[in-house]
Image 1 (tube, helix red, strand yellow):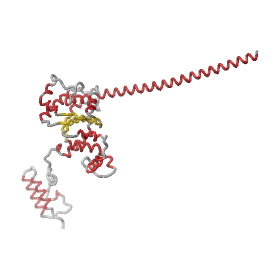
Image 2: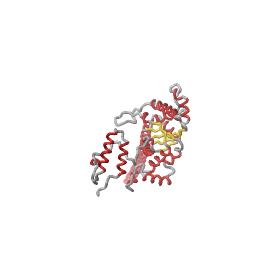
Image 3: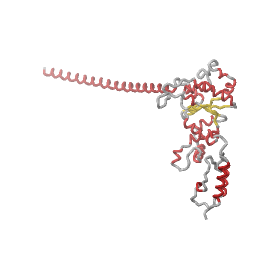
Length: 346
């Protein structure tokens, strides 16, 4: 005998139809068609459309997976994925420890930070997009508060978990939330190298931590951020009161006093406070460094060429002088023999 429609499934569909935002009349019609169809036997090949035209609504949610009331960016799984993506795509991150900042103080700090970044002149040549138009990264620099524990786990995944390496070992799931990633970081963490990037960053990720993320390494923008969030004259002086009076408001100053720069991650390398300030103090940005590197390589090549030419010239002169000396000695011997012959003949 063909199986009947399960009563629990019929009840789940009924409850789902009652949760819809449609009018009561279509739901009642669907329930009536469902009851009428339940009196007949259902074949194994019957589809939902064959059961009296029954069709689930577009906003149907299975009862085994109810909708979450939390926003996606506040869910732990989504937050972990966003942190791993941030670590893989962001070349420059500054870490700050903060203590009991209010929402008004955060707003004042972000306001002053945005104002300082807007005053940084746009690059002339580099960085540039495919069309050769200079890019201004000031609008993409963000200050965000981190969930320290989740960010710590995300850093472990980025540092120790390699999906390409694990793909050759098993056919299991290899995403950041998979059990393979969890087992990998659990095994590697116990025997982690103390000189690894995670071992260097882990002491900084203690307590409440905030991060400033840069989409590109720009010493000029880094200097602007340091002059606001961690000023240290004369290299990174704070803005003057006449130029930016809002920076000296009581709310902004109270918030800035609760921020402490502890380090940074630049191009997959960990820098302490002094290292971050060194990168921010590069005059002219990366273009100046590239020009200095090219000049150094050219001067080194020129010096190597001159040294090689000098040695070759010295060797040639030595051989040439020795050849001349041998020729003179040979010519002198021949002249003496001719003189002896002349004497004997006379």
